[in-house]
Length: 395
Ligand code: BGC
Image (spheres, rainbow, N blue to C red):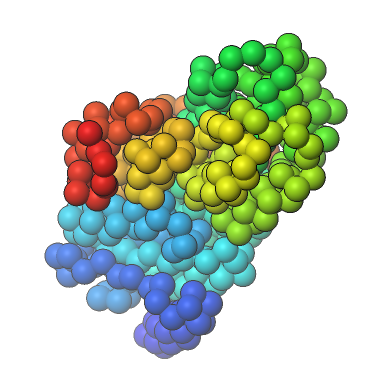
């Protein structure tokens, strides 16, 4: 009993820390019809050590990277809905771009007695220590969307086909580039701490590289990419060097200032009709805003991913060329199905494996689709993913 009281007190104090770390509004508990499920959970939580107790336990803990990108708010909403509907108690915490907050969030959830941890890591390698702490308490760890690397403590991985995301971006650029050769190509990437940034870049590079090697495209903003432009398969280190130069850190402001600096640095031969590999929607909008105000840039093709509402509007308005549709409803629902199986003591279904540097992790992978002006309606509206009323000028 004393132990239980201690763990509750610990949980409360950790929650307070997490709230401070997240700007005071990051803790969300699903309500739903969960009383019974909580009671059942308490009987099942032996593996979680001494921290769960009847009535105060949380069965599924979810840690997401940031509230500042719509993408993760969609994931949050889906988790809360699906887990609530399934009658599970759950809690979603946001790391707000900080590995330290992420660690505190995981500790908070461990102290709440979770049996399953679903975590989208802020930093692929820094998160290893947190999931190891969870594993040591008998918690099953699901790496969500972003792979946690360099540890044995990840049980499952649920992800989109991230290499395919990059391939779709590269192929779109090839198919929609202006006629001719010597077309300036601007490359941008995600955060170097996110394993996905490598997978997206790998897919895009493999697709674009033959067209760089044959002179169709000329890299305008990365000497490191130029240095390896004859190689189709890059090593992780080579990619890290390039990403180090063209990273946006998944931050709109970094994307904006890099784009401004690039346009200031280049001459007229790198302007005119150009193409831009932008890694996701938030950064694409920032970069597009910069390029569209340069009077020497006469046209641009720019990629994205996530199908964020603001970017879908940019696509309708002709300010962003494409986005990749990653159906977060499917990803969250696959993950909840996995958690349900785990909580029932069964083995969840997987369809592939990902190696995280230490082990092959059983994984569930989801395909992606390309959204352009022509497919907004069929892919995003007719499917019910978004409501037409969220957009203007939709045909
Ligand atoms: C996700 C993207 C997201 C990016 C920035 C990546 O790991 O896969 O969907 O746009 O992180 O948050």
